[in-house]
Image (cartoon, rainbow, N blue to C red; front, side, top):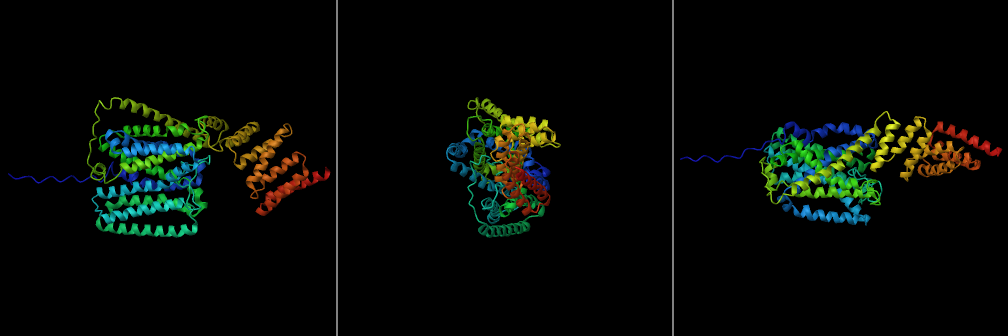
Length: 559
């Protein structure tokens, strides 16, 4: 009796969810195609679309956090396997969070760790996906080639971290962590340009050598069709960190790339949801994409609940510095996410390798009904809580959209601004924008009221808001003498803010002196404004100020 030859294991499918889904979402083609849109948004100005940040975080980043929570905490076996990270690391981060409320340096260290670790967290995911793409297509990857590919990702992440810690560097990876309170800040290494430039040149050169060497070896061993997904990932990796490097080298370019953090984080979150959904489906945890997305969305919302609660205004008198607590919460949330991800997604882990490299389904270990009788109701209740911050974020996004819509309408802006103030999330300048709309509508009293609200909530308001409020107060000074003193305070603030860069503050202060009958001061201040305008070569402004100087001199001679 002849014995049949043992069956060979089936070759893994090269795709996770299908060719175009994988290429567009997982391997980064959609991100590459979106680069022109990214530049268009950058040119429009970051402050013009805050609603887009919330929308992207709501749709992609929130469930990407939730996917990690479910992967680690849902099954008893995983909770036991990753107990060091799931329990003890979580408790340690919680203790550091509490310590940061009392020691600013600890909070700044957490923020710095989050910002510095971020580039490698994104790069590490791309590195794992490159290996997955090659292995599933049967491309041979020996230890030497693996180290070479790994080095390309280490170098690109290192260049981004270097950019972050240059003396002229910007928070290019901290778009979601800006601390408006100024309590916590990046503890930058402050690398001077004279040192940074040779490091950047050497790093870029080494990266190009490694990419070229790895590409040469791969092309010799596999057809280009099999290498295309890995090539897309390497291209996306380069485009992720080119803006960051540009910001670090040329500080003046920072404003144009302020959207980098959100764009990169969104691409990263989309990739993460793509691969974790596939993994959950192969493990038999979820029957459909809708169920997976809904559960991860609610779990991520639960994680964000404390951050939203402590946002300025929502916590009321519970905390003295809501903005600082939010920054701290975002830092700890991401550090927790980084730690858990580093523990659970290792391709050398047998369970992960069977699913991602060899495309073998792995059935989850059942949890006995006697041990989980209370688990599902409690989990459902906790997940329901996650809907609260998500609902608040959705409402905030709609309100910000109402404010940013054009043409602007004072009534719509007023209603949206009032709701945002109730949430404690009114963006900087919103009352100033409302005041400008009231001025255009011919309602100076309402405009002044709106400007005053902005001035009351911001110790350092935009100069144009202080200027408009000062001129409205000057107009009211004949019937309200006390308005002139308020106008003078704002005019002096403008002089301090603008200095010798613009004559506006000096002109405003000169007008205040003139209204108060202080002609000598009005003349001297207007002459100072005239010198600034002449130095700038602003001829129309020079002619206007010359007329004011003549008027003040004439009034002084008559007095």
